[in-house]
Length: 83
Image (tube, one colour):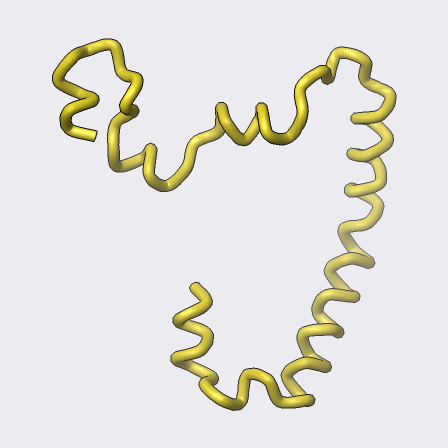
């Protein structure tokens, strides 16, 4: 994705006008998302059943690689050889 941005905008990417636009978009996104983020953080701190961290959730999550390549821990013997 980053390569596409550099290909489209090239050296104009780091101009002061673009940086100001990026900052404006960031401020707007944080303004609209902050109530949801705040509720999420409060819920996580009050929930005593949440014993695992973010790393645990990321380990169990799907990545783009796992959509096309089977798992190397698959129980069938031929599947890890494909991966």
